[in-house]
Amino acid sequence: MATYEDRIWWSPDGLRLHARDYPGEAPLPLVCLPGLTRNARDYAALAERLSPRFRVIAVDLRGRGESGYAKDPMSYVPLSYVQDVEAMLRAFGIERFVAIGTSLGGIVTMLLAGMHQGVVAGALLNDVGPEIEPAGLARIRGYVGRSSTWPTWMHAARCVQEGNADVYPDYGIEDWLAMAKRLYRLNSAGRVVLDYDLRIAEPFRVPGNEAGPDMWRALAALRQVPVLVTRGERSDILSAAIAERMVSALGDAELATVPRVGHAPTLTEPALEGPIERLLAKAIRAAEPATS
Image (tube, rainbow, N blue to C red; front, side, top):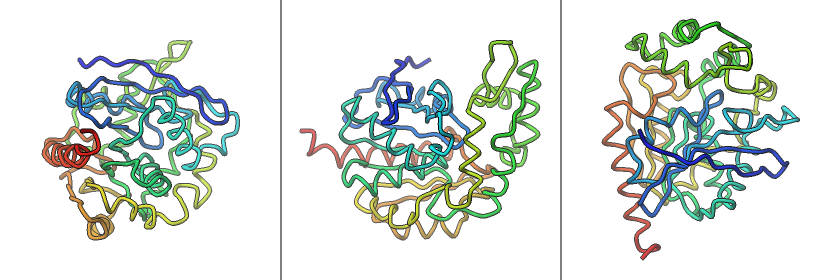
C-alpha cells in the first residue's frame, strides 16, 4: 500500500484544509481534485499505482473529508475551491503540476488553467466539460445534501448500490463496500454517515453556481498542454458530442471512453491505464527543458 503524508494548509478565509501527499520522483506533481460529494480517498487506488513514480497530492475540498466545514455555505462554489487550491500551491511550493479533476474537480482545473497561464502543465478532465447535461445536473441536485445514516457498512453499501447501479452495472458487493468507505465515515456515535458537509447542496441548487461563466474560454487555456478527456459511456453529465468538441478545440488532446460506466469513471479502469500513462509521459517530456 502506498504511503502518504497528511498535509494541512489554510484557506484565504481561514479554513483548515487537508490533502494526502504521496511521494514521487517525477519532476511534475499530480494534483487530484475530486467530485462534488467526494474526497481524497477517491484517488487512493490511482495513487497506489502511480506513486512513487509520481508525487500525487489528493485534495479534500472544503467541507469534505478531513478539511474543515465552511461557516458560510455559499462559499461552496468553484471560485472558492480555486482560491483554496491556489493557497495550497503557495503553501506547498508548487509552481507547475498536472491536474487530475473528476467532475467538479475538472471544473476547478479548467478555471485554474484560465486564471494562471502556464501553471497547469497537463490535465485529465474526468467526465466533465464546459457544458453539463441538464439531466445529470437534475439527478445530482436530487440527492446532494440529503442526510443518510446507517448502522453498518453493509447497510451503507446497499444504499450506494441502489443509487448507482446504473452507473456501475458490473459492480459486485465488494466494489460497493469499497465505494461506501470512500463516500462515508463513522461518526462519534458509531453510525455510518456521509463524509461531507450537507450544506454544499445550498449553492449547488442555484442554477449557474455549478461552474464558471465562460467554461469554453477556460478550457481554451489548456490548448498548449497535453489533455486527456475521459468519459463514461453511460454518462449523463458529459455527452459524447461535447467530449468530441472538447478534443477538437484543444491542441494535444485524447478522448478515452470507458465502456459500461456512467458518471464518473474511477480512473482505475483498464481502458484508462494506457491513456493516463501517455498523458503523463507527454507532460513530463514537455517539462524536461524547464527542469534541466
